Image (cartoon, rainbow, N blue to C red):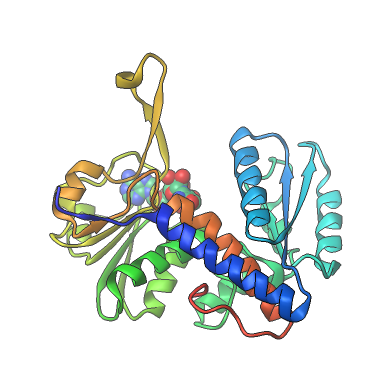
Length: 300
Ligand code: NDP
């Protein structure tokens, strides 16, 4: 194995430290405590774990955490009314509605009901438009985390060939926009892309967000490329015992690490950066709401 391992867990800890020190300053200098409201509808076990982690890390960074848990059968109108209240609450600087929502709800309508200035997930149509036109926006947390790691590892990204595998609204598309903003030459590949291995081999930066366990093999990777593996997939792990599972990325880690210059592991790569960037976005939103300068290095 030759690739440098990009340690997302350690990097996320440094982001959280920056967030926490900025929170201390906001409190001391301005008497303001940033607040993040997380709304969970239903009892999806994975979502419950995410929400718990987000709340815990919010408090650990010195911010206020407001958790709203609603039953799965909550009418959409009640959720929209809660969002209205959170939009109007000056103690709440960031609002996150945990996805997926139950089937009877229109996720787009719910997300677009959030005040764009408090949309710390960056999914509101206004923020999508601002990002797409290169204006100041709230940037989706996972791509923001990927960008921070890329900048940290590579410095300037200008002129590099970047291939983003996946075109979802929450990862692939905003990732491509951010890389374009860094003056990369960006290709977005997806399930209909022809000769995808060849497309990948042109990448100086390869971001994999397809949700297919270990799909990207070492011979898809350009020697020395930087590989960011966003995928989180659970697969059977009979070697750990009967019925056991383990997490893997979208990249076949061992073969990719033989060829890449640097690679993020799964777990411990992009995953920890996502929550750290949510906290960063909350501080950023709080500073913007109060007309204060934003913390350096925590935005795109
Ligand atoms: P989506 O399912 O929304 O999108 C997957 C994308 O991958 C689609 O654009 C799809 O193409 C493309 N794709 C699927 N199969 C192939 C294939 N065989 N070849 C080429 N392209 C393919 O997934 P998300 O973007 O939400 O998530 C992607 C992965 O990232 C998942 O593993 C998810 O768990 C993980 N994730 C991790 C996060 C983290 O914090 N680390 C946060 C969010 C997601 P098409 O559009 O043509 O169907």
